[in-house]
Image (cartoon, rainbow, N blue to C red; front, side, top):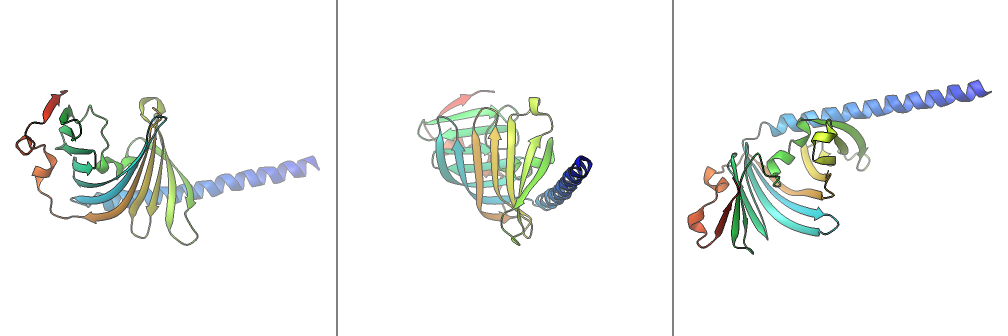
Length: 212
């Protein structure tokens, strides 16, 4: 009798493993489709909602972002950030200051990076389909090198029919959680390069703090 019970338990265990393997293959297919489509875009315009949560913070803001390759620009009610691929300018209107940093050194929210964040140094796990037949799927991402990553877990929601991201939840090791929801997305519109650089002449009197 014990042997029969053990055999049944083992069979269920193997079925669960095989079932999860199949689901993770689906996650891989979805991520590959997202990457391939996103890499065809010359530019992106995104209307988004960003929620930042921690022990001290619980704030939600709406914003607009524009990206082109490694360049990005986004604005929310309390800040405007410019990046030309090498330098990041963070303008805080309330402080009347603009902070200048090397792009490689700053951990500024990067809307362009979020759209393909799973491409490098992440493992994946399928979670669920949001509702039956919706073809909107939830996938978890885990850093392949946890000790070297600032991220703990990333959960993304993707529409497989449109091959587009709908929502990304980023849980960082420092206890900060970012929830990035996409309200509107337009690809391949014409965007001039001047939008990605801080224009000092347009902001007279603003104090610049150069951290490079």
